[in-house]
Image (cartoon, rainbow, N blue to C red; front, side):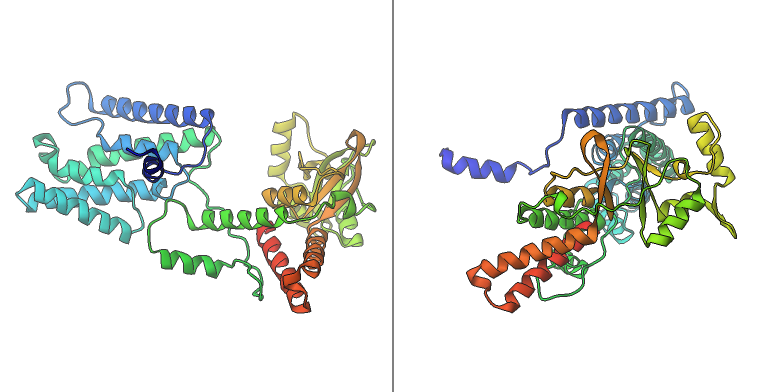
Length: 411
């Protein structure tokens, strides 16, 4: 076969998968091993030795691929596996009773199961094998009748799902997967900013099942917008936009002082620094609202928060800034480019970040609003030197595009 012909053919046959580390491959394999082993052993222990009922059915192997290798997939979520397997088992048993020809019954069971799973939003590919197992599983399965839905299908499903919840969360994978928060859509403009409505329209027009949640897809596209924006940004650094006149607070300062500083200076974040001006964390309005209780005298530590801090630190809290601050905050450096600043803000959803200099001492704060303004000015400047955008409308469009893209990416 001609090499020039075979290479494009191979590229079409091989899936385009994102690169996965060896660590992640080992994690997924170990998860599947533990999930299937635990499910089989617990089921066998419940049945006892010599039982005629199957302890573990083959479709669980396919479910293990989804639950442990791609736990963020919509096809791997708890309702997908529970609803999909139960629907498929019910359909398979019913069709097996009504249609005498096993091959015809298998086709009908598989097709009906897929249609119902899509209707009930619990599409789970291994459930197609559950439907076929109910039809083609032989006398041992047929004798169970509708009991097949509860055992082994229901029991196997709940057991492997329980292992998946524990294993994924213990190994750093959020499960059930929480879809990425969809950023607020940018205000409509004459630019090319991507809106949530645009994504919905594209998905409707595409009209196919995608193995990615809608929220995750939108977040991915927003990050791509941001990457394109920062790629076009100029050489300016963090030092050019940071605010040096910063109000900070000591870790031992009372919560009432933190509230007073936020109100007096009309700010939303206070860096918490030690006696050498090193950043220990940040205290935001959200920290005060979420981690403190309020009465007529202002914020104070509640009993639950006090117990949490006492158990975590081994000592009683004092109702000070250190007790409610966000520790281990991301810090910027003055020499960072604006592109690096934008990426760090976007990754953590930050609106303000402290900037540290030599010896990690606080030297300023960067606000998201200042970053947006600077990038908009850069875009307008580039537009003024571009022969294709010499008119004022072109410069305005460039600013609109940057503002919309950056707002979407940083949201």
